[in-house]
Image (cartoon, rainbow, N blue to C red):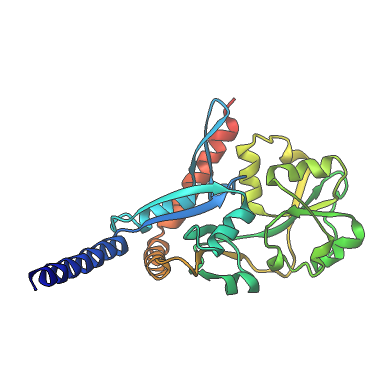
Length: 273
């Protein structure tokens, strides 16, 4: 009988310890967020020292710092190829991806937060090819004029291009201007703000002289979101905390201040030898 009582007490204590541990894990999760490893400035890009890429920085990093500042929640940010980033979030290996646009498939695969910034869908071309902008009202009208380049894994649904199979995809945003110079493409698609940031990070000083860009006609600014894994044990916590704090940051004007600070920092990087 005494042995049975001892076993019963041990069983109760084990359950209690397990519950306490589970509660601590819920209250103090260790989260992981991923960003694009080829950079998406000013939203995420690498700090550089003597030409070497170091820690990820940018608007995304600052927003996350503010979102979790008062929570005590630990998290890390990892830079991955974009397709792998999305895949690991979808599979629950990573809790969420930063700086993502939406389409129907992503809305099904992930939990999207509210938009926390907007970008301008644009197309770029060589000024020498088109001293005057192409006369189009829809992006599909570029197809008969030449090849169109984009980035593998990027979402171009919000650009209005219906024949996405016509898009010639490469791996790195920084290489898109070179595709025009080498006559591999006549046009490339990019969000204006991030292409200009990429040019600054990579010191592509001649782009202002040789490139021209136009906003995609009849297309609105494109909202960008955090995509949260539906398999994350903390999906609800992340969604509620992010949306609440980001709403406050937008209302106070702090998001705009963060963005302007990184734009200025990119300009300084571009002018450094």
